[in-house]
Image (cartoon, rainbow, N blue to C red; front, top):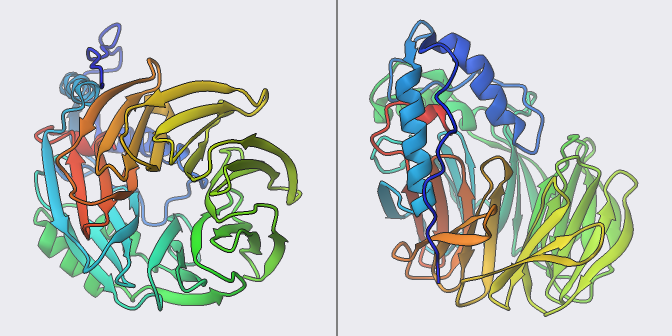
Length: 417
């Protein structure tokens, strides 16, 4: 059963000035947001200001209102109660993967296409399609990872597919559409005007070498490597500079379903259908040790800065493995079927999960309790979730995307993302 916890309140009122200009705020808020991402921040087109307030740099912010709204946002999260839910059919078939950056959402599907969506937290509006890439792969698009701060390509995307290929894309500004039209109130006009000035994302290379579907991948934080895993039971490392394969690891005995890199970029872990988790040295590109050998069917994994590795699979629960001791430190139960996907926000002490039971659940990592079960969003297996401080995006076998917005009606919602 999901327990509910009371809203966490700040111990005291903020000591910062009650009003401050937007230009002063953005220098700190944007750097804070970017610091939690996998890749170092070096904004391409400048920060994205709130779309619910006048976006000029001279806007005066009411800090007391911001404090109250932040407290209300935390209350909604702690109760597992989104203030606005959007459910859209976004593809013609199952949606296997999604990625979220600021006000942009990217989705990949069994229909072989990739789509870009604009959605503003707190607006109460549906996501707006701003770009469609049909036939991005020859078969299903299974996974994606993005470096939004790649300066040369104005955003770099890497996608993996059932066709066994990895494609590297130059996004050429599509993740930064919202940065180009600050001050344009109508999102339809803003996106149309911005996208008309941009070149379409460009395919840079097709990486071949896997013998079966590419199930997961990541970009190394130091921007030098692409790491992929496959149904062929191998892990491969590719040079991000030359786009050539440099290492091949055939050490699992079943499909390698998922990967996760430590925030430091020094190590990563892999989880397989054979029930094993292996720890790898990313700098020296070698196996360190086998960490875990348990129930077959591991499906998702996340390597946190604290040294805990959260993973889930066919046993319908989460475990947290201590990388130093190899012992299970936490055991979280609540889903009724295979746990397919998870995302952890360490700064918020929150985990969001999705399952084949069609549910999206919110977990408080301080109490290890499920504080919310969002059970009415999908009518198919949940394949992917993404989250920030304001919303949860989930995609499903039923070809839909759900956006659970916890910030609807909050004037300063975009500042919390």
